[in-house]
Image 1 (cartoon, rainbow, N blue to C red):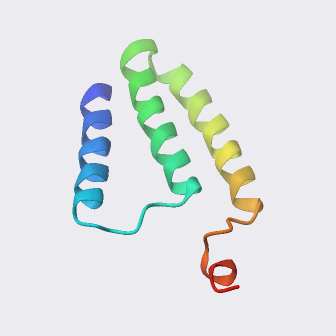
Image 2: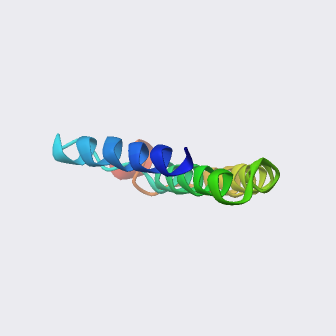
Length: 78
């Protein structure tokens, strides 16, 4: 099941890229990778490891969101 979810995430990403959408920010990439990683961990190691990994992922993602992304609108126009 985890592998299918990982594949689905990458297919969605590929479709967005092909359609010429704006590239996701670093936070979006991080969330995507962590989600795929958590899904893979569920299928390989079971639920407990994946829950710990998800919590770690949330902490990392929120830490990244605290630092400003230079490509976001307020900075892009400067």
